[in-house]
Image (cartoon, rainbow, N blue to C red; front, side, top):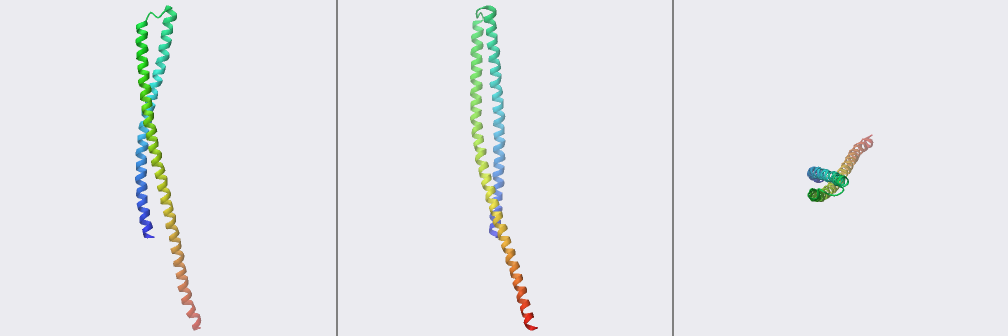
Length: 156
């Protein structure tokens, strides 16, 4: 029983280490989630800018009948397209890191759950052994009481 208790202590320590590892992985995931939110905001800003740009050039076309601001239109379009491409690229890169971080969290969580199950099984095994030991002690005490009682009856 003492060996089981020592094994349980070791497994509890390992479980604590796994929980610390899980906390660090969750913190890293939160950092990546924050980056992802920032990247998503940037993509949304680009989309808003694209809508404004579309409205501007359509107004120029409607007002002037032609694109008189051709160079400005072209430069704006190139700059907006580059910004859009960069924002999507950053978003996709952060999304990939988020998937990796989530996979790490999932793997550690599975290890934590298995470790908790092992600890619980050991606790139950220890509890069973303690009950059996109590039953044996009670039987021994009862047996000794009966042994002492039997000679007393014979002498009477």
